[in-house]
Image 1: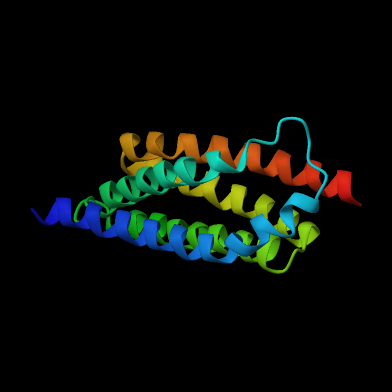
Image 2 (image 1 turned 120 degrees about the vertical axis):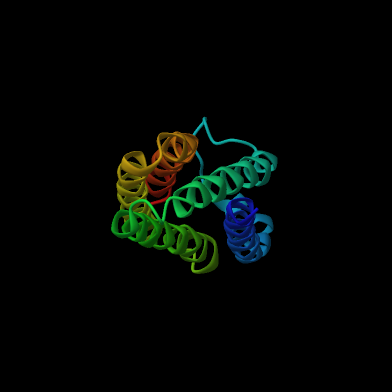
Length: 158
């Protein structure tokens, strides 16, 4: 049962980070964000919450699966969970930079760093548990899309 509790615990942490990040965005989505020029491929606002919810759940399951391998490869698991934690904090920071501070350039620089840390997390997870690594692929794809979106918003507004 402990293995399931680890997964549930990490999923809960990821969803909490997502919820806290959404608290930063709520006001700006109504006031500042609509004033920005956006590219034609910008999704409707209603898409973001369900997509991020699924991604946070997948991320949590992935990290829980890796955590469950602690007894088999302690150092690599610790390294993987370190990078996972770093990317989760950077994930939250992006919302603060973009929606909280309205600093598109800083958010753009930060999302590139975020993508690199997610990819490193994926590579480490792949050495530990291939299923866990595969669960990060939708997240990598979404952050890739979000990076292009952020670049486009920056270009269109400056």
